[in-house]
Amino acid sequence: MTTVLTDAGEFEVPDAAGSDGALWLSGREAEDATGWVAKSEGICKGDICVPLPPGREQEFVRGSRLNLVALWRHLGQPAVHSDRGHVWVLGASARVDDVLTANYHRLKVGNGYSPDDVNRKRLALEGVLVPLTAEWNERLLLGAGFHTVDCFWAWGPFRAWVAVK
Image (cartoon, rainbow, N blue to C red; front, top):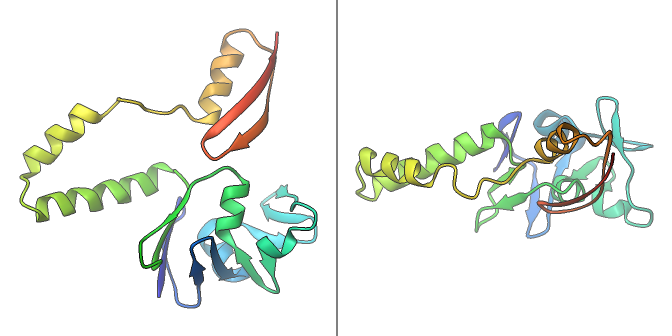
């Protein structure tokens, strides 16, 4: 059994096939967990379709299975897994962050720290080195008077924009 955490929730996936660089789910499981589906025009979520890199289609889709890690990395989103590969976290949503934070706090309390100690540490660290989201950066650029803002490069959490005044 594999657990997949996404912004849509926590999903138990009995037939997932995970390895260091891949997490293969059936089309139905992938859609339930993420909303993304494989179509002839690429991998789509609602009206948004992401074309697959030419010649690399097998990295993303094999038969009716979808490699969510390849998709997440292609989208510039984080994908991490437990040492044993039985828990995967896809994305950096607030929901996933809340689940990870709650689990971390339980771990700290279980290791002998008081809830007050854990909370004081959280408050001391909160707001330090908080990365801005891509949307936040784009709003800042638009607010600074740029009328066109286009992200032309993304790799992991890194982005580059062209902005025109």
